[in-house]
Amino acid sequence: MSKEQSAYCIALEQLRLAAEQLNLEDGIHQMLKVPKRSLNVCITIRMDNGEFGVFNGCRVQHMDARGPFKGGIRYHPRVNLDEVTALSMWMTWKCAVIDIPYGGAKGGICCNPKEMSKGELERMTRRYTSMIFDIIGPYRDVPAPDVYTDAQTMAWIMDTYSQIKGYSVPECVTGKPISIGGSEGRAEATSLGTDICAREAAKTVGLKFKGATVAVQGFGNVGWNAAKIAYDWGCKIVAVSDSTGGIYNAKGLNPYKVYDHKVKTGSVVNYKGCETITNEEVLATKCDILIPAALENSITKENADKIKAKIISEGANGPTTPEADKVLCEKGVFLVPDILANAGGVTVSYYEWVQNLERDHWPLEEVNRRLETKMAKAFKDVVTTAKKDKCSMRLAALMLGVRRVADAIKTLGLWP
View 1 (cartoon, rainbow, N blue to C red):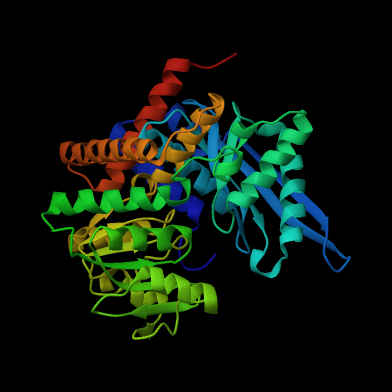
View 2 (cartoon, one colour):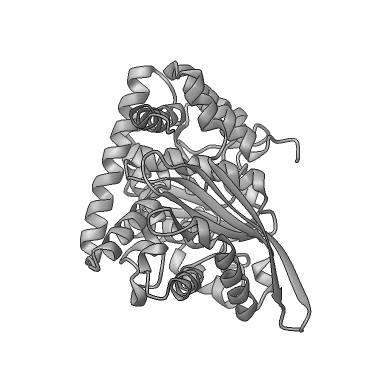
């Protein structure tokens, strides 16, 4: 790895801090340090040029004491077992913090989807599904979209799983297209939850949310929707970025027009009227609210001191290292941690699963109303814990999640 800790080391350190604060018994701490199951698979497909394509994939299931495993599947050149294991652990805490009956899992394939055709992606997805078929299912492990996967990917997974079973099983996966059982509001859910947390954080620190300046690192599904929703709520978006670079305009920019520009050109860079900046400079932008919505380890001890935002609402998973956390805490930045801030996606995934099990379909207003209630309640729970235990929001969220999982483990006992 680089100078920074690996994602799994960070997850273990966060668990250690929470266990210490909770006086968690050592046996349960040891159980929570390692996933219940990890499956590595080698996925071989026929590429469009007739040659074999060989890809490494995995599915990691961390803990299911509170319900079926739940977690996304990502396609990225940097996918590895260490990262996926950390993400599965964070999913366990996330589901517990938001208080939905799931445990944590995560999956991924090491590939570059930007260099693959739709046909190649479909063949890879279907083969991967067939290889993890025995450990997934509506009551065992329910996958969802993640980095560089989407509703179409989930449709292929659902169809492959259903073909093997011999009948339609829409509840085997979430984040599907609405036409085959997906939920209203799922595409924007993670972003909506992130913005709800930013709004609640503004209330907590006495900052007027309407008119607040916002910078967003990452302009994929989460970042773009977070910028769009914040803009619609009256915030001023001053900076956004994607993997190629960033743009800045102190007077504010229209994320809808930036999105159209990205669709046409492949990047947010060179959008009219904006200064071109780096991803690092987006993080250091002078703003009220910063939403990191890219990949892990974006905010480190090297750049944390340059951050000028009053509030950080983490749209990405693991964007801040433990060393950076300390720096931000000392600076007085109000940070809403990932396991709370981006829990909107898994919450609406849960609602989709419930709708599928009941063969029902809720209107968007119902989904968003339920999400608003869940996110606001979880934010209040974490703030209450932070005040009671005189600790950071990160540690408070971890303590809340770990405590709920530990309580479930102790209640269930060990079998045999």
